[in-house]
Length: 385
Image (cartoon, rainbow, N blue to C red; front, top):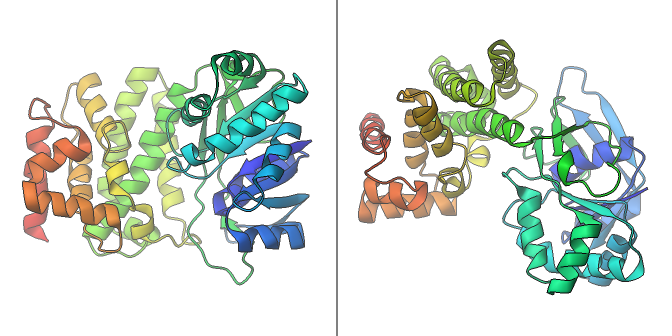
C-alpha cells in the first residue's frame, strides 16, 4: 500500500508517518526542504523517540521523499498511484498544494476510476473540506463531478504534542506518548483506510471542538499566561500554581459548555481535562512559550481556540467565562518581538486602541457581552506588568 504524505516536518514524520508505517504503508513524503528530502531518500528510515522516562525508540522504515519544488511531475505520478493521501503542513500552506494535488488527481482520473481519500491532518476545523475547496477551484464542472464520485476528503481531528526540537540526527523526532486521530467516516469514498490509531466517527464536530477547545485552548493559554508571568517553557509555566489554576479554570469553563452542548459524560470530560494538564506538564517535552504562542492573530480569530469557547460558554451556559476572558486579554498583551503577528497586534493596539483591535482580530463588537469585560481585563493585566 502506498501513502502520499504532504509535509516531512516533525509532525508528519513523528505522528502521521509513524502510524502509516505501522499500518503497512510505504510512505512517500512530499516537501520542499531539500535537506530532509535527501536524508529520507538516503536513509529510508528514521527514529521516533517517546518523551517519557523510558525514552522508547521506534524505527520507521519503508519511507522515501520527493521535493515538490524540484520534481512536481514525480508528485503527480505518485498521487495517481497512491492508496491514500494525507497532509500535515499547516492550514496556511494547504492552498499552496491545491494545484499540484489537482493535477495528480486529474492524472489518476484519466488512468483509472480507483477511489482515493485525501485527509488533511491539521490544527483546524474542516481542514480536508478546505483543501477540497481549493482543489476544486482548479477544476472544470465536468472534472468536479467526476472527482465527487471518485475522491473523498474526510475531515479529521488530530492531537499529538510534537515540540520544536533540534537533534544531531536531523530525521529523529521526539513526540509525546499520547495521540488521537479521529476521522469522519461519512465522507470516505470506497473502503475505509485501515490505519492503526484512527477512530472513525459518524459526527466529527463534537470531537473537533472537544480537542480544539481543550487541548489547543489550554496549550495557547499556558503559552500566553506563561509569557505574561515570565516563564520560558510550557512545562515551567504549568509548574507555576497561578498559571496552572488559570489554565485549569479556563478548561473547566470550555468543558462546561462542551458537556452541555454535545452531551459528553461530565466525569469522562473532567478526566480528559486532567490528562491534558498532565501532558502540558511533561518534563520530557521542553516547548518554548513563544513557539506555542506564535501566530496570535490566527489564535485570536472569532472561530478559533480563545474567542469561540468564551462566546459559546456565554451563549450555552449563560454566564461570564472569567478565566477564558483573562486568557484572551493575555493573548492581546503578547508582545514577543520575534513574532510578526504579535508585532502587528501590538502596533494596531498602539495606533487604534484595544477596542478597535478586538474588532479587527477577534471579530468582537461592542454588542458582544464579552467586549467590555475583555477590554477591562486587558487594562488590568497591562497595569500589573
